[in-house]
Image (cartoon, rainbow, N blue to C red; front, side, top):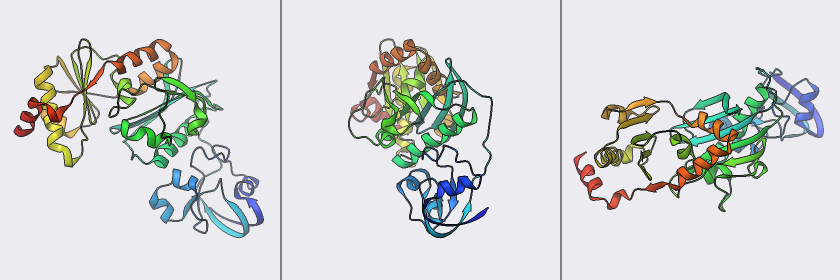
Length: 324
């Protein structure tokens, strides 16, 4: 739909609201869904946060932070009606980013009420932060929730600081002000981060699994032992394919797991055989953590028990690498 405006130093949002357009998040810059085609506007920080490079090059912008000063013609890419669902009196939210998936949803009373699970995303700050804001706002609007009470925020180690935009250490396994991250919630809960190379997503994936399990999830390999969880991370990229295969053989040979679990799609592990494919436990465990201090404490203990394997210095791993 094409629209024409003539105004002097007036917010575009105000002009569009007069025409009956309803901004999905009230024009607060939390969702990235008020898209317009208006290449006359120079991309703002908000545009760069929510829009892809391809969209920017095609002249797509967000309407919520633009000012009209003169004659303007735009093409509006969002409608007047909201996508509604069953109303919820309250809800918490979660956004978890791993290299094998993105999990965003609403939870209440320890259960997942609605969610958006999709493929993994890149590690750029604006891409991740914008996606967390946009998808959570979409869900809370769909269910007529004004704002999430607590929002669980977790990511693998490569993405965590990119997501938060903060360089200093953050409280791990605790709650903090959601305003630090511009999230549509009162508080942000950050699951414990086990170490420099392991993110807060892994405790959420492993919680509730049993001793003797070997779990492969994206680049994570985790064997749950009696007193500790042995963990390694190898990027599942083509450049490290041999190292990835060697790590699978290393864990199988060293620990002889009683159960082998592969989370989601994994061509390398599927070809290896002997693994049971399961869906991720992140959404259900995130919902449980948002409702229970007992679960939060268990996540802290689980993270503290994790030991990262030094594979490059291990003779067994080197032997496995030479055999692949």
